[in-house]
Length: 474
Image (tube, rainbow, N blue to C red):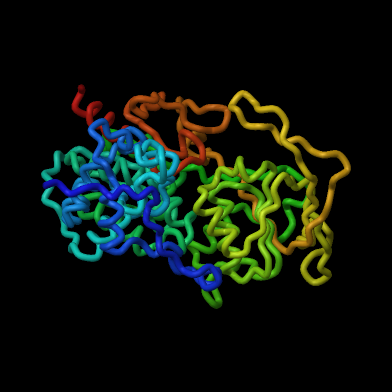
């Protein structure tokens, strides 16, 4: 007799660190399901024949199949099903916005909460990493070299797919550690670096080679890669160029882009005593923006010793682009949200010992103006409008701008014929990732601008399939 499904409406809660404790450490906030919770959650899946959840996954994981294996306690079998579609399951189980993708389509979500697909993916990947020794796979290589530029989610996904198909894949990374935004952008308390290293080691065992400290366009150009025998190139260079508001005071000491702030903390380990790369700690911090990066920066500032952290966002809570889980965690940790508020100036002061004029001074306060929401624009978002004579100051010591990023222009500047759009994104064929140059493909944030990890992985996977067909003259 088949086992009856678990028909309770609520998904099993994710165990987490206590908010008062976690706000002062960099240990992972979400602790993950244990075996009992995973089995109970897996039983909530109805194993729908039309599998709507799969349609919401950018890399098309066979979700009902892997959950069925979890129900059978075949956790390694579940992992192998996921691994046929995803190169980074432990990462995706932690940072993928399942609530707007696979879980959004879950039938169980109609009258209750959807199945915790992401939590089950994380459990399965962690079980595999804890119990199965990773070994090199004997994949027959075809002798064809492919270069992947950038070791972020799109590059790693593309590299993994091509390696499985027998190609000799070399990944070129500009920084000294692999992982791209996964390494420098996402804090330890959301994505432990040991987890990322385990995922990258799996790719290395597929035969992927990663070379760090190489800036394509500076150290070596794409033209030179072709001369060196590479038959195709994938550009997964991300969107690491920070945006600023263009308001007075953004050049003051104590004003960071979120990219710089998180890179100093995550990759350069500025949170340790006597770091080689310093960062301003303590005091009062204002983070401008409402996305996941803003949440990461604010929660990092708190862990670095800030007395108070504000998130300043020009729309209301209903329009926040950050994951609901991240917003909830930030609030629990004591971060204060200033909604319908927009900065118009950063006020500085002169330090006689360190600055000769106010332009090179330090942050004293951030001047804001209150906003109200007007009519929806063409995308359906209500436009924020300033309220006259509503200016006010917030005394702060540090300001972090988390209002978005753009693709790095180095590749474009060193390659003639590569078409980009007005935002600097590489223009590609939406079905293959092919650029305007024969043999060069691109995907992820370098094409779309800052987006999700899983969408970047989907683009990398799609491009790998197209590169395979291109090199086979199909």
